[in-house]
Amino acid sequence: MEDFSTHAHSPAHLAVSHHDHAALRRIVSSLPQLAKAGEVFTEAESLAAELQADAVSAVIDRRDVPGRETPLHLAVRLRDPISAEILMAAGADWSLQNEHGWSALQEAVCTREEAIAMIIARNYQPLAWAKWCRRLPRIVASAARIRDFYMEITFHFESSVIPFIGRIAPSDTYRIWKRGSNLRADMTLAGFDGFRIQRSDQTFLFLGGGHTSDDGNLTISPGSLIVLAHKEKEINNALEGAGTQPTEAEVAHEVALMSQTNMYRPGIDVTQAELVPHLNWRRQERTETVGNWKAKVYDMLHVMLDSALCTGNSDGVCEDEEHGVCDSQENGSGGSYEKCESNGVVKDKKSWLGWNKKNSKSNSDDTEDPKLLKKFSKLVPEGSNQILVDQQKSTSEYPKEDTWGC
Image: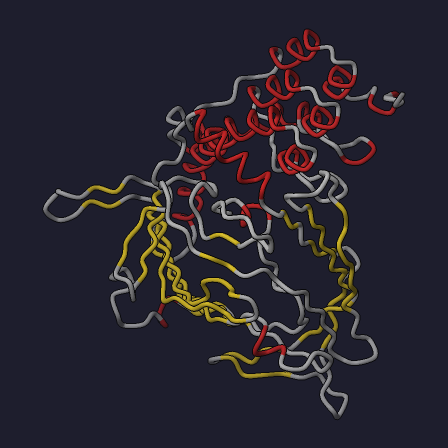
């Protein structure tokens, strides 16, 4: 019998550990109600709503217990769908990770708790949309107060330890314009196909103030995120369908796909990381000219890389797969590389938060559409420790082209 005395300081954990659903409902009912989508319009209302959300999270999302488990994690481990339902209805954050790096949803899928996985999958999309709507007025107001700018961020990876890392690791130049509460970002890095980098000339437009065409026939609501694929001449609203309550059939299909798909949890621990100037062969600090700026080059030492795998056909146990350390004290520039799964592109019903995104292929022979894999396996650029970053340019350095055109 597990000793839950270490959870006594957390009423929510204690109620879940004793399967005391009445006590858990009393705890939840005493908390402020989270603002729903469409109820927050001004910056002041957004700030007030965030304070309420923080108060709720401090009770139902706390992780100051052994294993850094939230009450939702504990409900999954104790196979208690009723507690999971109560917590999700109160706005529990399913994406928080325990000490092993797994979210409550991932734990539910790994342990074959399909009922709890369906509860989480049914609620997380509307909850995430409500959170976005709560924060949007504050984001727009804050963006409007920042002065307009144009900026380029260039990154690439180098290593004296790993050969050809520059060809394998990702590299790109991000061009970013900010005007008013609107933001535009141009990039070419689209994904990975095995060791090959996929490129796509694309633009992301965040229209904080919305947009209305000159003839009035087209209106884009404030806070919209538009994705333009220039080569394909496609325009998509990334937030289309956001907040829509999924049907039970969609939720069941979603959970079934998760159960059949390998889940990866790549991680990087930088708590012991250290940035030190990179030295050239004369033992002097290395500098490079980036645009009009003179930039220093730094090495990052003592970075721990680890990954975990939960296979769709396993017995539900998620285990660490491998560990590595990036340490370049002796070699001057260290790095580590882990093999990444290839990506596929699947088009399906439009939605948000991964219901139809670019997906990672499983290494199994499943014929089901693995569209949920990317949700759990965001690729982390692993390997190099040298990053060159362009500095911010002044507004006078805007390119003469119309930055908001397609």
